[in-house]
Image (cartoon, rainbow, N blue to C red; front, side, top):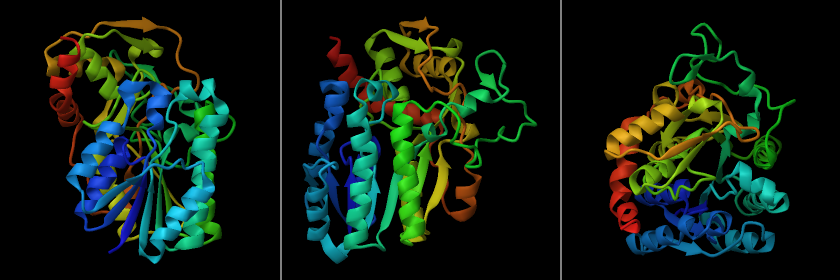
Length: 358
């Protein structure tokens, strides 16, 4: 049977990809070493999710404790799968702006060098296996902050006649801007995934994600916007909004829809593909709008304060233009809107989050 490797298989996107590709008829091998608990503390551990996947898919899924910075270990694992390798779903990462600045060598080692190790193992073992990389919109640095945004009350917005009003496409430059150290390490990986696709004619794609979310997200202050926001609202924990008067805009996409996009690409891959992948305009919200939605769904009031110190390299406004991916893969469409995504995050976690405060 064909085998799919999922890196970061206990994380938000990785765990959804495991479920999706098992149900699509593949065996799945996860690479997971719970680095998230090192990055963000025990509350962010992926261990609980990994245990659940092992139990749920005992015949189709196995988890390998492996660090993607270990090039020899990665190659040995790939060689053990051999010609059965159908796809590599690379979701493992150090995902936080702020954490990257605390330890740049680890951030770059995981995000850039780890990606190189996976690409090279794929090239040596099964170069026609689909390689899917979860990149980030942070490869564009703070260039979106140069957009002529206007304050329309609860959010910042572009004029309707602006080229990017419907969403930012991949024509935006990634040069001449501040990226954050995290953005740089992900950009290095992004470019290498593209280069392996074009230079070695491998089927590779970079999905430059906006806010990717879902009920299994182990959100923390440094990463996991909607999940952490809902958690704080439910549990009564204080929340800090950083910069832009809380009117910064993000588009949000459910992990289920991300996995569906991955499968669509896997069925009809191409070399060196790049797409911006988020919720699009219809699934966008400002921080203030997200707070109001969490309060409405939970029936509780969030204890939040404001800091005028925005995070370095953070975006004032981001909405993804999905038209290029939708044109190439017209069978793909989103099944979750913002309200249903937030409701699912709440319903899946409310008992656990409430019990933690009892």
